[in-house]
Image 1 (cartoon, rainbow, N blue to C red):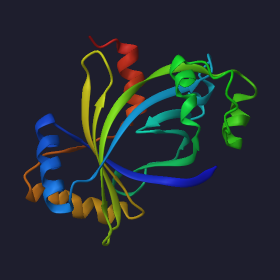
Image 2 (cartoon, rainbow, N blue to C red):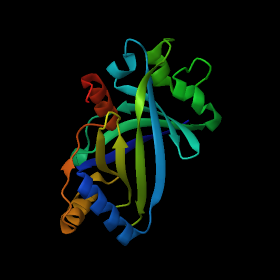
Image 3 (cartoon, one colour):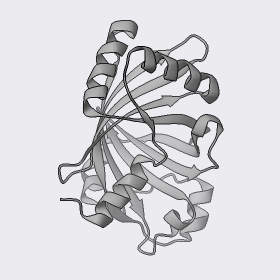
Image 4 (tube, rainbow, N blue to C red):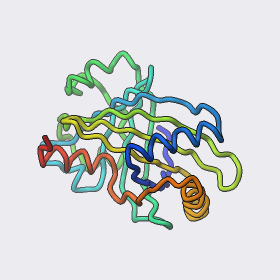
Length: 207
């Protein structure tokens, strides 16, 4: 199971800003790589992973099925979100079982920190959300992966966001803040992850 530290800036956009930024990025960097992402999350009934700042996500991404486990780390430079991240690709034919919310028939290759916190407790489905993503690779310093997201949380709730993943968050923040200002695209720093927003929206039953 691949392990790394994920470092990313998250900037919230308006629907209009999302459209403008999409057009600008395509014009300057090419068509981008589209990803259709159906995300499902799991925890125990007593939410022990959540209390330990861990989560398990299974994502159908285009034709693949990706298992991602995350552990939250302190906020990094320029307000960057930081996580320990463990990932592995699974058999995509397992998706119907995942979507049904029953993992009892799947032997997930979970990392040791997750296994330790679970302590044998079964996983239950929390639900999930759908994300349309367009990815752009910026190879010059500061190297970065730019992900333009439109996220459907259900109940007519849509969020728009730019995620910038890089080992150089401060340099990326400076570069892309200046670039978005030049393109006259307003944005705000997003301090809350999609998963945390999903939980909040679900608990508040947004109509």
